[in-house]
Length: 214
Image 1: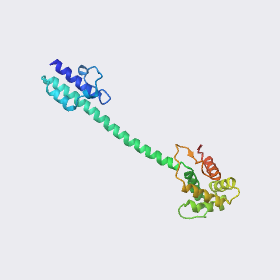
Image 2: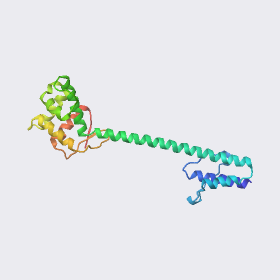
Image 3: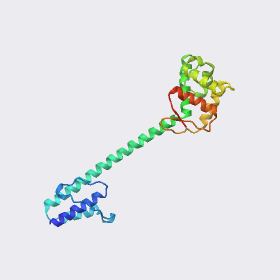
Image 4: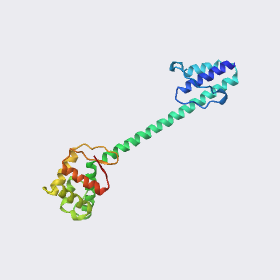
């Protein structure tokens, strides 16, 4: 009888060790873990068959309870793992969304929205913000607020040979045509963009407290 019970305990231990963690079996049934080939790990049906072969009813019940406890613990761990996986996928989705905003185009558009609020308060525009529409208005009325002034002065300083209104429209067109550059909390400006465009976006980033990465 004792030999049968020790054999069953060893089978339980081998099966559970294949999942990567050792279950909390009763102290008097926990064997020493030994290395075995993967092919020697028994299936559940083999364990149950071994349990049925134990003559002593008390020992048979105790062995069954041990297996049930192990199975329950394993199911709980798998459930927690699934929940964690869902949370990680949500976090990754949020990161991708945030990274999409932290681009040269995202910064330019945000400043344009802030300038729109200034111009709307002054009565120069109505309705909702349209970046392509607000740029010439902000350039013509830079005195209405700091963000309008920032757009105007940046365009004038970085592209001194062009009219600020035309410069801002050109920058917006270039950034709109370009795919967003992903970044991790900083703003990445494509080095292939014209120098004037990169200069303007850098100044906008400096004002907003954003760091430009190479």
